[in-house]
Image (cartoon, rainbow, N blue to C red; front, side):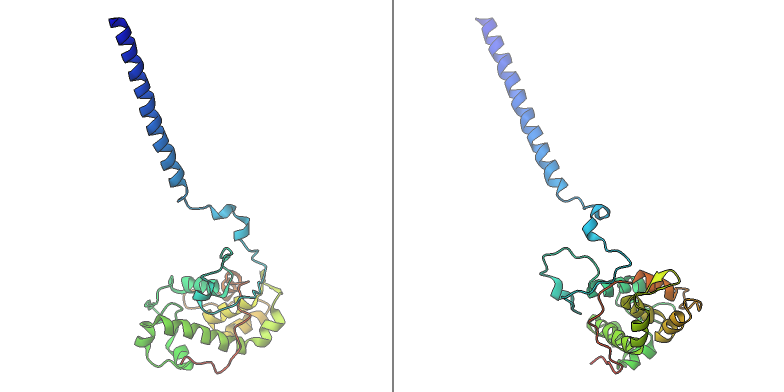
Length: 227
């Protein structure tokens, strides 16, 4: 009788241990599953994320306002106009609205005082403290540069100069860096005139880095101002 009690007690303890470990294993599996959902996706393996750098994209949904893209169901591919603005801004200032560099260029897109006056902005402090003003200034200067370089865009878009395929967005980005005149000289010399800014950044590098973005709906306007 005593032996039967011990056997029954051992069986009960074994069953208890099995149930307890099953419970812990179940919790571990659930935690691992939930945690894996928050791990970043390796975009290097996602073919749909990338765009051929030699491709120039023309979207049917262009906009200058980031808010217009919020409700899109498609993955953001980074070649919309908003992507262009942010890519240039990161290169210029890491996207910092209040940055002033050692040469006196200001804001997210690194404007000089002369450029600001040309587009109608007379107060540098107000410009630095207004993200809205800076975004408008960037678009206004794009419109002016597009007007100045309209013939260059038509003549050179799609061609390869000094190993770089030329696109409209690359031309506009390079003009933002070094001015429309420098871009014209570089392209008309077939890349022989090496133009660069005060820090050594070249026109060629901007033509390559910012090629293929959506800028076709920016309207050329030689009198564009920020109001």
